Image 1: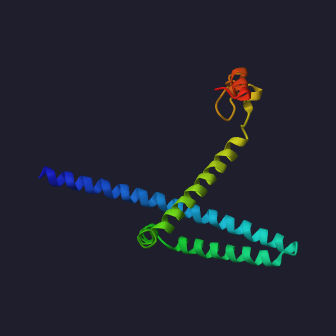
Image 2 (image 1 turned 60 degrees about the vertical axis):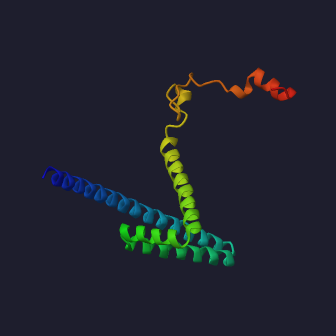
Image 3 (image 1 turned 180 degrees about the vertical axis):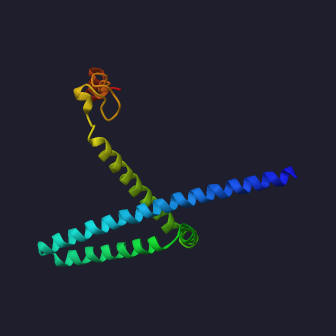
Length: 163
């Protein structure tokens, strides 16, 4: 009897974890589609700028790319997380190279996005170390380590070719 209760508790825990993960992925999906919408707006603004400067052909290609991005974003908004995961699994089975390449590109873009978000957040407090506070690396103004590449011993070994 205790074994059945343990299994039921384990199944309940797994269901809660799945629900939490699905909710988190859904939130991230919504953020991603909002971000794509912002990119589409920026791309469309650049096409207006291109047209103002008589670059109609380039503007047309950029506008087509914005249209594709917008359609893809709308499709993504309409799907639930389960459908997206199922399509990703199907793509991975049919075309593994495309899947891996896409995953790599998404990872690079995500890392770049996170880095730029972090940089923007810390830019208001950047280099406070010069005024006595911590700089963006958490190092006090006078506590910065010395640049070892300008050490005379290191410089002379590079200059003479000796190691």
